[in-house]
Length: 263
Ligand code: AP5
Image (cartoon, rainbow, N blue to C red; front, side, top):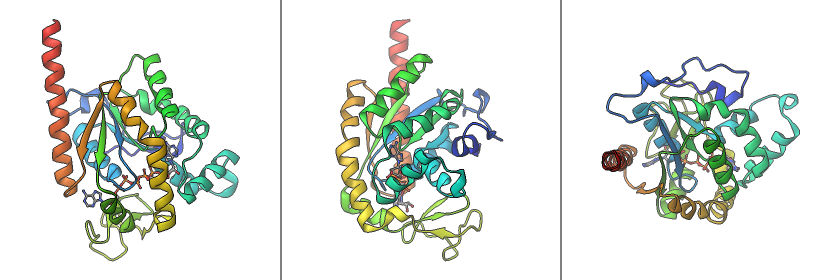
């Protein structure tokens, strides 16, 4: 199943042409899956979210992608808050919580959809995590798990510096680890590959510092809620996916045993 994420990327007036429904959840899966992917910039969250979307049928919702899509719009189509947000992003700093939350509330339907979601890049601060918890509780929904990808800083910098992204379909490549067949051309759609502005060395440092300061406290937050699943992001994307699926399936089994004990 392929979700086009149009509604997520453009906001409420856009229609999803391929929305997930409960029938599309893969056989054997306990879905809908509602996952948060944590991990430093460049650890591979977006790459894994793509794989997990195909495996679990849930929609890949990346807050960074929404900001990047907004940056492509005409100047007159950008609100003052969005212009300010893009300025923060360019420098590698976090966008203020109020702007992120406003953007997310507009897209609340994507979070409530019966197909589930894979949140990539949100939440990033304790305030964002608390707002998300409140929204889900209001709707009697809960997260399935929070996957925390771990990788040494040197490997993260290597992944970020070599990343190339398709400007048309947003597919992600790496100059040495996942090269496209045609130089600077997307294998998937033929679009042009570019290097993200915030993947320059100065912005990478700011992003890693922001992650350390604002996002690492989320690990404790989700650990206290019993949701944190730490996973090594070493190895190929396929290795990391296999590790992730093993851990998630293990969670399912534990939940099954607990449910049987209660009934
Ligand atoms: P965002 O787009 O979320 O960026 P990020 O968190 O910095 O994460 P990245 O997209 O850089 O990395 P990734 O972990 O997805 O790695 P990827 O899979 O691409 O946010 C950008 C900005 O938006 C923020 O800085 C902030 O300004 C703003 N923003 C967004 N959300 C916000 C929020 N909630 N609050 C405030 N501000 C917010 O992989 C990286 C590279 O490695 C690729 O080249 C890939 O091919 C390669 N790779 C991946 N996996 C492997 C592997 N296993 N082996 C080898 N190579 C691999």
